Image 1 (cartoon, rainbow, N blue to C red):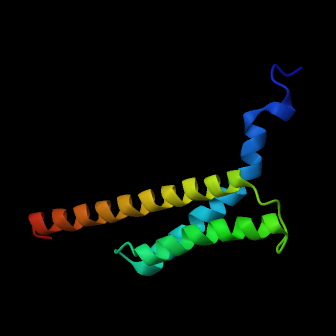
Image 2: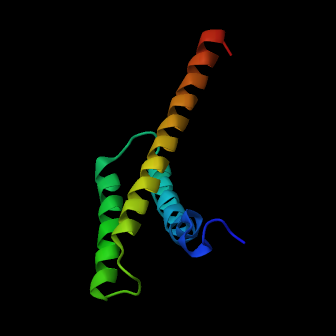
Length: 105
């Protein structure tokens, strides 16, 4: 017997949004990796716009899907996490380079 009904549990909702979030994370990561060390505002704006357009096209029925606003929030959250991870990796890379310069390696 479950203390929380399985249908209402929060982890069931994660199952719905995790694939969307991972797709958004990988899509944003690929754009950031292609652009290298510089954040390109144009491409970042295009990615976020694509998320919204994709869901709007689903909502009006041009492509298959549900057109859910929570999907857009999920995309934005995971894309933001990808941007933070990319920024952190650039910071760590710069820190490593500075460390090698300072130690003479």
